[in-house]
Length: 118
Ligand code: SF4
Ligand code: SF4
Image (cartoon, rainbow, N blue to C red):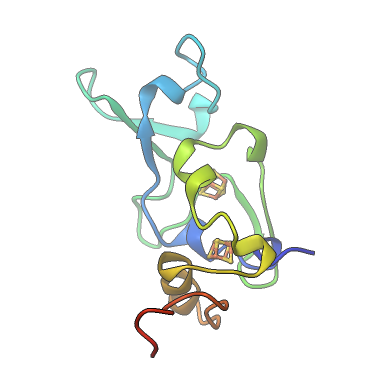
């Protein structure tokens, strides 16, 4: 099992904001609109539902953080999720991954804070 499927901390630590063009309600979009919040008609942004709430947790995240999780829209997740800490599942974290893990009481992966050791 990869590191991310036993974590999920980032999905409950950061706002997940992306272009409305990624919503499946738009031509060529793919992110389920039912799981997103949209701002005003003039706003170009959408947000994964739950990622601007307190406590913060993406509505698409299933399972228990730090134990076992899954993203119920993994193949349709928005671009910030695709770009986040891409080597973390294989065991190499970065600072944002490390911050999220610490926020949820998990130790940072190797690779986090290399430039600024704790
Ligand atoms: S990227 Fe980091 S914080 Fe996110 S699920 Fe993977 S290990 Fe956890
Ligand atoms: S869409 Fe999936 S990968 Fe992105 S924050 Fe939500 S649960 Fe995590």
